[in-house]
Image (cartoon, rainbow, N blue to C red; front, side):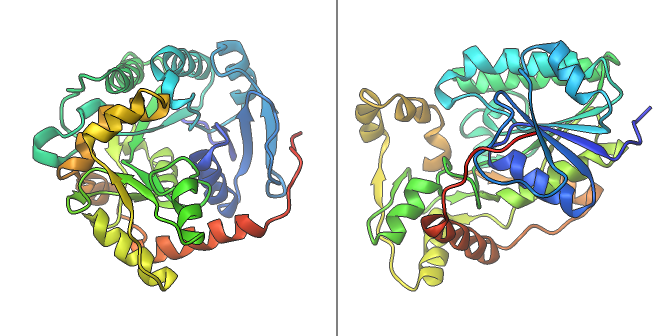
Length: 326
C-alpha cells in the first residue's frame, strides 16, 4: 500500500533534483535532499533538509527514506563514468527503498532506445535498441527497476525526457558554456544539423512530470515520456533565443568528423559522440500517452527561454554562498 506521509526524498542535488524540490515545496511537502556530502552550495528553502547518504549502500538509503511517501532518484554520476558508477547507484537505491513503503520515481533519459530510433519519432513503447555503452547502461538500469516492480519488490515509475535546459542546467546543450558565450557576445558551440527537428525539454516540465507520476497509482510499473513543448528545429530555438536577447546568434557547429577529432583530447566530447545521430537527424519525442493519462500543458519555449536567460544572467551577479546542510 502507498505511504500517506507528506515527506518526500530527493536523491541528487543537481538541476533536476532541485527543480523537483521547488515544485514539492510549492505543494507544501516536507522535503529532504540527499547527496554524498550532506551539503549544497546554495541556500535551500525553509523547511528543506540536506542530509548525507551513499546511494550505493542500501542500508543508508533505507535509513534516510524510511518515513517517505515518494523517493525521487535524480542523482547521476559523471557522464564519462556511467557504465561503471551508475548501475551500483541505481541498485543501491532500489534495494534500499525496497525495505520501505515509499514509491520510487526515477528521472531517466532516452538513450536506451538508441540514437535515432523509428525514423526519429520516439514513443515510450519502443524497444530498447541502444548499441552504445551509455545507452545499454540506461536500458539495463531501467529494466532492472521495472522487473523489481513486477516482482513486487517495490513500487516504481520512470519519467523520461530528452535534452533538457533551464535554470541550474549547467551541463546541458543549452547550458552554462552556451549561455555564457551568448552573454559575452561570443559564438556558442553546438553539434549536428541545426535544421533537423529536435525535442528539448524545459527542466521545470521534467520535474513537473516526475512529481505527477509520483502522485498517481496509474503511473506505476511503467516508463513515461514527460511533456515537452512542441518540437522545433535547433535553428528555430536559436531564433527564439535571439529574439529574447535582442541580437543575432551565429553558433560554431561541430560535425561528426570534428567531434571525433576533438574527442581524442576531450573525454566528454568523446562520450557525446555516441548520441551525435540524435542531433544530425530528426529527433521528435512523443509524450501523448502521458498527456492522455495525466493531462498537463508544457511550458512554451518562449517562456522557458525567458526564465532560463533570467537565471543565467542572475548567476553572473549573484554573491557566492557557502555550502549548507542539516
